[in-house]
Length: 398
Figure 1: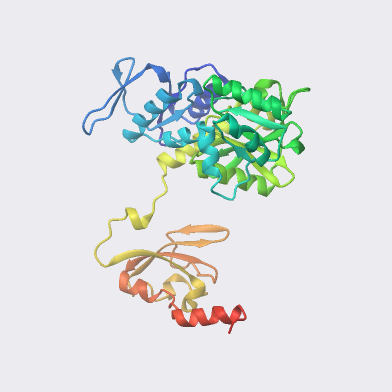
Figure 2: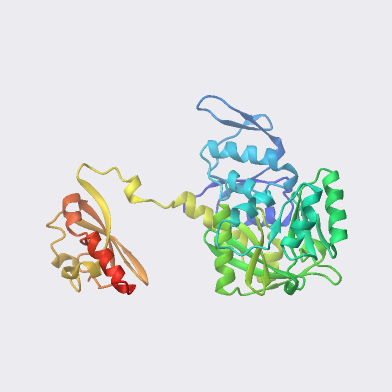
């Protein structure tokens, strides 16, 4: 086992999430240090970005896990950027955290894609308030402070007059707000999907306390484990990917038209999700970091220092019938100076296959070898005119 030195950026070493991440890393043999985000200073020198912790130059870390509170976002992201400039891995990059912390920016980013989000408006002039509310279907509406967290700064306005008065008051206090359509059918519940890497590792349904429309645990809401439908799981994963986060809590409403993403949280708490589902989410986070730092994905075509005239290519066997049902040693690949690096099948990947490995019809071969020989294995491209003619025929226009 190769061990890592991991830093956790947190101002609260005793809070549940920080403790669990530390425990999960230590249990797997890693060295862990909890670092108070506000105790850093930075030096910006030519080709020498440096970090100082309590005025001592920071020694090497393999990875850093940001648990940056919203109150110190600006400085916390500056510290994280400095780690990034020093080549230290973070599961959530500073730019992605900044994107998620700005609720307007996050919604703007998601709105470009086929991702369900509540209809949302952003206004500044008082004369735009009522027309904007009517554009999203009228009251009731949800009014959200851009800087609010854990349900703080989220207000339900039942009528236009109340909504207008609240928004004008907040604007006079130099607060920016979002106005969102109220999804009545969600009935005070939402779903949080916890994303690690490219998968949902756990999900829970949060239910608001009596007399409360906000389902946040910090507002007295209850939690229960939930098995996500594929539509909700795919939406959560895509939302995290669009924002650029590898560790995220994606909050969704269950609406009559499918999942509606409310927020993509870059520093989701672990207590509620672990206790309600029984899933070791902290362990999943450490496993993801191990995968990225100790066993990073390698694109052979980018990383290999190839000699002149040699390259790497993939070939589906159904395009190469002369290879089907033959053992590797019985093919002419070796004579053509082509080596099979791996064979991919629906149920498995066979690295460095042996000579007696039989090639199946649905296999995908990753090969290294002479470029001229590799090109001869490429399927021939059909002439463009024939392709267009065939397309017109299929459309009934020819």
